Length: 325
Image 1 (cartoon, rainbow, N blue to C red):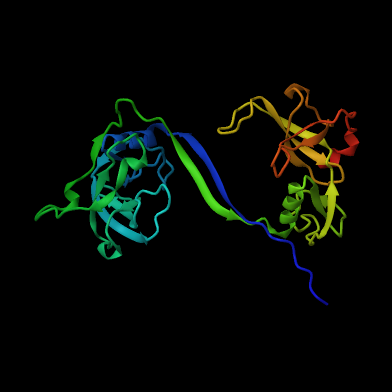
Image 2 (image 1 turned 90 degrees about the vertical axis):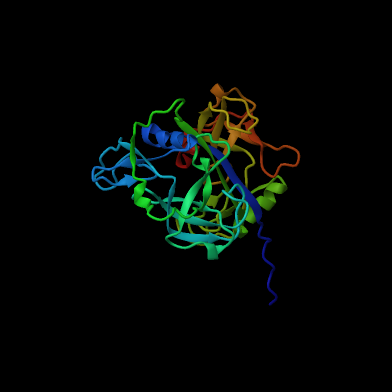
């Protein structure tokens, strides 16, 4: 018997990107402020060890650390790995080595990039120095990279550059940072979700039914999460549904052209046994409620509903959706 060709499995590049904002506290704030001023600070533990980068708590005793000391800007490579293919927004636009460098006066190593022509120029024990960025803002990137240090000369040893007490006080201290986070990858949704996405392109919403418990899952995952068996029977659901729960969004997302406040809701489509989420429009945010009957609104060229709006039907009775909360 000839085999039936399977569905086309989709794949597409996907980028997840957002700015990550965090406050620094007195120790890490002083460390990054020091980098802006071409100074490297470490934290002294109760046992006298110098941690670079500094930690707020002793990793051995968990005691709070507040004593800061200045260490050298030269150091020794303790271990390394060659990076032949730099990535976007990396520290260097050419092949380089990732190195752990124990700066003079420190007892722990700092991870950064080493600018050398090739792996034959790197070794454990190599003496290196900081190459400072031309413009410094109070970030780890104020260290542009490390580079091999010239010979220190006879009679001069790394131990000569010992830690110096520092009060951690600078003009205009750095108190917080905004770090961009980005993840690039290729996403393949699999056969079940590929069928679901293909149906959405035709403005249809398709799920799959479990052969054991008979529940219909939208969007489908290819297997029933309760019974653990494969799902293959396709079932068209909706397009109308019922709001089961919802939240009011009051914070405007970057690059999202939607005025706040607005409502995101879990919506149980007619014929589905799993609620999906979608934005509610066409109604004031403070009039959205559990049981509200809604329908999808598609925009030109969209592969999924832009939002859901009220149908004008009476609200659904609680007992019809309580198992889908």
